[in-house]
Length: 340
Image (cartoon, rainbow, N blue to C red; front, side, top):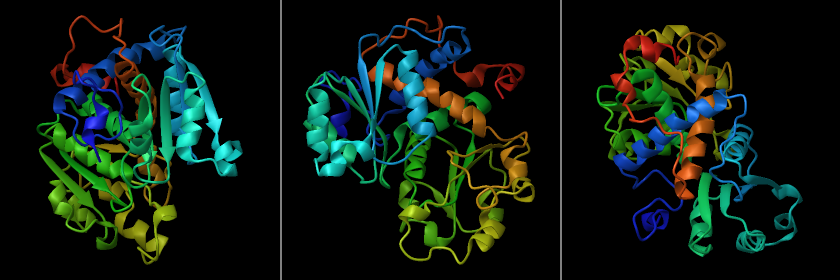
């Protein structure tokens, strides 16, 4: 994929298509900006005028609840006008091409498209054909990337665990088919995590996955030993061709996150999941609803992170930034605990 598409001639972020190629500095700028937006959700009037007069179109060719809803809320909190296009009822179902759909919406003076598509590279294709003033955010394309999910996961880790440099992280589940896993790996490597493991049966690990800078593990006992963060993934059954697991029952027995398996991790480890969760398949309810779970905060943080991305690519400067941006690792333990 052409990384140059993401930046303008001045080196500013123009589109967000993938985390691959983003510098540590750019990722931290997004996370710091999101930190400044957290307080907006706590106000009585949850709006700031940063994108007033701008039009945002959520163009989802795949079903979604969390991602589409949080993008809609994020845009509205920035005071943008938001259109959610029902693709099933649109002209694309009548044979109109993807680019023709985009061009027609451009003619309605759209400023930003948030695109989810089943085909890898769809967001990149659109980005190559829009005029300079139009921005694109990839909300998930095939098995390729889901950058805002990766960013909100980094925000969650930083809020609850502080600096990345000493952390051991395990990503567990369907690594092979997961665009979320790819974005998580790229972000964690860019932020300098101490150790990154991917845990799955061999049938759900990409070939030569070690080249991504991760340690592959096929046993939970090895993968979870002493880790600080456990990131669970959904089985992407809609993208599987053929049998990748013997049975769901056996998969849960071997790779489902239960209290007993979580006990292998560090005592203060956090548990994450991008959703939707399949309870009793990837994760036990006792863990999903337990004290180490930060799954619901992930959803909340997703709004602030998506606000930050929209604000930055639209050229807005947040007017509510704290006087000095602090690394959450510098907070005292009691300060960090109150966010959990």
